[in-house]
Image 1 (cartoon, helix red, strand yellow):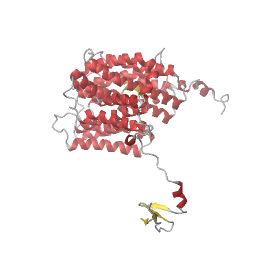
Image 2 (cartoon, rainbow, N blue to C red):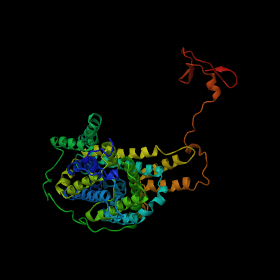
Image 3 (cartoon, rainbow, N blue to C red):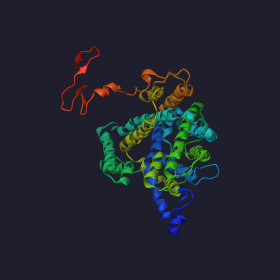
Image 4 (spheres, rainbow, N blue to C red):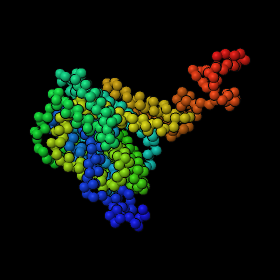
Length: 498
């Protein structure tokens, strides 16, 4: 149908930019709520991880969860609707970044607690806000070989967290590590797999959320879930600024967070380019800078309301591609839903009451998915006639050292421990340095780097092909003709052998 013959109602919903398409209010909120459901498991996981590590329980843990929902909603509204210099005006959902979790855990475990976490996030985000317009000039220091390493390490370094949840979360509890806890984790994991395999497209995409609900219901019948504290507190409340104390600013914590912020800037840039490709939107460096500034402003303000670093959620970019709903206003409606959820502490208390083993089952998939995303990025890296293989191998191994041996740097200065006790920081530093050494400054790097290069391309001499007849095949190292008879192999010295 030509544009002139389109119905008036359809013509009114179309705009010059595909992302500016207007939707009826009800439709926009329906699609927006779908975005919220898709990313809900991902947005509540970081506050659960960090809050549990900080020793928060009940109402305080619930407050941390609702704070992340609230600030994620505000960040989404800024990113999608935009104001001058801030916001890409693309259908991007914002939420607490997974990239920061491992580093924030290291800061918490280093004794700084949540005030040090909030200070590091605030200071690093301000630095990120300043460098955002110039980031395009340094983004070549974060090619896929670096970002792939970092994303893979993020996922792998969080696997012990999922294992801790599966065991019960509290090492002092009498049932910690019991077969019942691990069984509940396995049951939740099995539900995710079943829903992903047998469910419709929508059910499959919501398998994480549905499995948490189903696992929790089963836990209630098994007596392993306690919702007695859900109604103990206000149903509606505005997030109290600096509820956990004023932020403290520790240089080592800030440095480690700056590394994470650079990773977040890289990820958000990739998400902006990806959603632009999906929607057909036109993106230039100015629009990317606006999106990055929105990211960093949201992250800088987030600690005021007890939140953490914000970034675009890649899974929602996938949802835009699957549904074909390109309107940024649908995502903005989702941001509005997040804000409302953030004003309902009772919802946070419900989430905080979910049994840890149930979250462990979901965590295995969630964190594994992060690692798999990094592996997918690394699969696109060229390993031929270069040192990329040794960059990946060394960086991932270096990043996993503090994960598999938490006391590895126990005798080093505290500032060093804060930076390198985080697998993500360790991997990022090593990957960036090795990429500069081998790929940026190429002088001295061998063209054929022996064992560190990719295996050479296999070739067969043309004269070998000339000796083969139609129907010949190779089985178990032998050449057989079309009747299955073995063809003798002539050795170099002229003798015949097998």
